[in-house]
Image 1 (cartoon, helix red, strand yellow):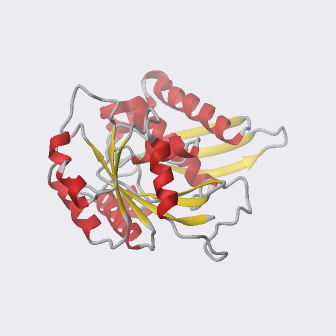
Image 2 (cartoon, rainbow, N blue to C red):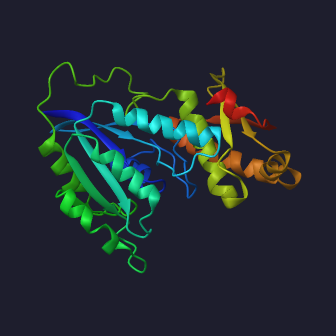
Length: 290
C-alpha cells in the first residue's frame, strides 16, 4: 500500500480545481472563469486498492497583489508549498502565453526538492496553443503528461505514475476516515463548504460584472424538526453598485443564485435545503474575514 501527499501548483485558472473535482468524483473545490476562485489550499483524499493520496489544491499564484485579498491568497499558497509533500504536480495551460506570472511559479517549483510531474492541461482545446513556449519544461521535468481535466482525458496514467512514486504507507501517515460526512475533504468544515458553493454560483452567474472581492459568510446551519436543513448566509461585496447587481431587478438575480446554490447543496448533502440569503455592502470585509 502506498500513501503520500501531492501538491498541485500553477497559475490561476490552469485547471487544478477541475482536475481534483473530476478525479475525486465530486465537488471538493469550486471553479469559475475568474482568477483566484480558490482562496485557500484544499486538501482532499483519493484512495483505491493501491493506497491513499492526499491532494493539496493551492490557489493560483498571481503576479500582482494590489489588494489585501490577493496578497493573503498568495501568502496561503506559499505556506502550502512549505508543507511536507511527496510529489509536486506543476500544471500549465498551453492555451495561454508564458509570462512573468508563470516564471514566478516555476521559480518556486525549482526550490522544492521533491519529485515533480509536469502536467499540460486543456489538450481538448486545439485551435489555440502556445505549446512551443513550454517545451523546455520537459527537459527540466522529464516526467510529463498531457491531459484534459475537463474531459477526464489521460488522467489514469498520471495517477498510476503518482502511486509508483509515492512511498510505502506507514500507520502514522495514513488518513483514517472517522467521519464519512467529511470525506473526501480533509480541511473544510460544513460552513466553509457551503459558503464556497454559494460563492461559485455568484461568480458563474454574474460573470465579469462582479469583482472577485465578493465573499459569502454562512452564519447558521441547523436541521429543523421537519428534516429540512436551514442555512442562513450573507453575501458581502465592497460596493453598493455590486450589491444592487447581485440582488437584481425585483430581487430576481439573488433568487436565481439562491435557487442554483440550494440545488447543489441539496445534491451534496442529500437533504432538503432552505437557503436564506442576504446581501450586504462592507468595503472592509477583507480585513475582517481573511
